[in-house]
Length: 315
Image (cartoon, rainbow, N blue to C red; front, side, top):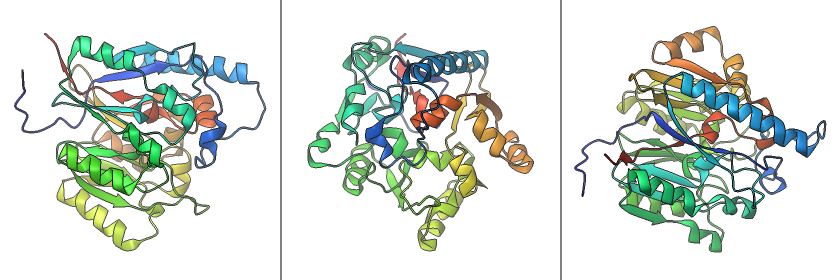
């Protein structure tokens, strides 16, 4: 059975999340994730317990807003501090493709779970699997929709280069998936590479949350913004300080009624100005999750916790 797809939907109402058993500060990822903080004010056990509470409350908020949430329990036999961020190891696409990705951190590679993929196969049409994870063997990484911001309708993948987002793999991915690339360099306030594109950029059908201040090369900035203009995206700029508050780490979705939503954290929301909130609300309803422990110790926010499911449901 093959679907004739002319245009891939840009947003979905179905999200997969992994309920953490061993959440905590990951020393391996901290070397290039400036968002992580470990101040030793609470114990690792307290961090893990509070993270589960934040996770469960966030799932409730999402479901109350009409989203379909598949919650997968963590594999308690494997200590994976970052399993709560599944969007980094796989992505799904409406033509029945699933891609698995190479991860920078060795302990994060344990997050890739064939049982999760088999569970998707049981309920959804999954025709094609692309394996990129072997690139880890030669020190090349591409961390899913952390590295890639996908304009699915226009077949454009945006990405900021970093140790976790390799140029060669970007080209290979785009060739296999039939996408154009919008690639750029982005730096934080200290001059460090921004580790994932999805902490400085969030894309919806007709607007983009955009941390353009982070691009040191004006020509790259102009080229990327030209793509936004050509594809009908209104730019809502965010500052470097707002990027540091996870204002770029948002996800556009639709609920079961077809209403457009923009998911963000309470931290991100509180960093926004009234005018930014008004502009966002002219397009989408804002849905907030309060996850300060996950943000502080994990260095990622709500978007990182949400793996979008674009596969077609088996009738």
